[in-house]
Length: 67
Picture: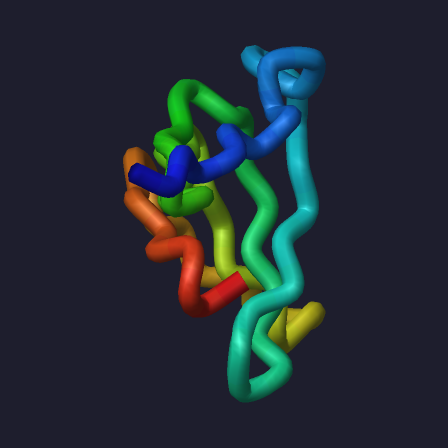
């Protein structure tokens, strides 16, 4: 059985992150959780793709395949 490596994200828990997603989207938020597939849970997330008009997302889950 092959064991998957867990992402090294513990050091970033409860810190503000900037994620660059597919389609040139950028999301910032506070990291609240993650899993082995690098799905992340962000709190107070905002989509800042359009800098002059950030979209408030609140608590959000971003799939690891999008990062």
